[in-house]
Amino acid sequence: MLQRSRFFAVAAVAALGSMLWAAETSTVTITNKSSWQIDQLYMSPADSDEWGPDQLGEKVIKPGDSFALTDIPCSRWDLKIVDEDGDECELRKVDLCAHEAKWDITNDELLTCEGHK
Image 1 (cartoon, rainbow, N blue to C red):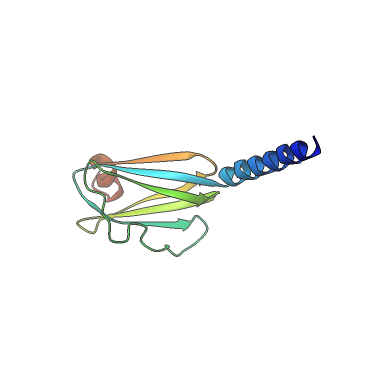
Image 2 (tube, helix red, strand yellow):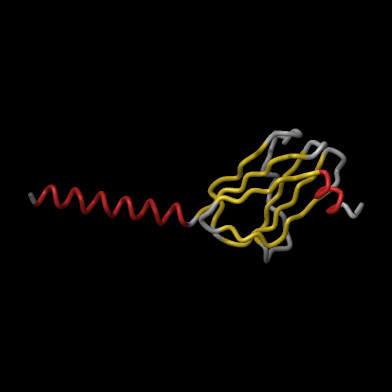
């Protein structure tokens, strides 16, 4: 009986630890609903003046495709995309904490970010 109690106690602690870890990170899914390919994607803590590395690496997000950034630490973030023409679009101070966020990139959004509207 004591072994069974220990097993359930260990299982409960492991489950709680797993839930706490999950609560510490988020996922952002970027969907390209524009006519332009997205060639680069950068993230930065909202209070930083420097962008982190290109999150896409060798990948691109073609029109109609999506890309998910996972295990993002709980915080406020800035996101920047660069399209195939080198035009940039930024999303500032996104509060990411234990949830899934979605960013749909549309033609209107890209043109507005680039100052065309």
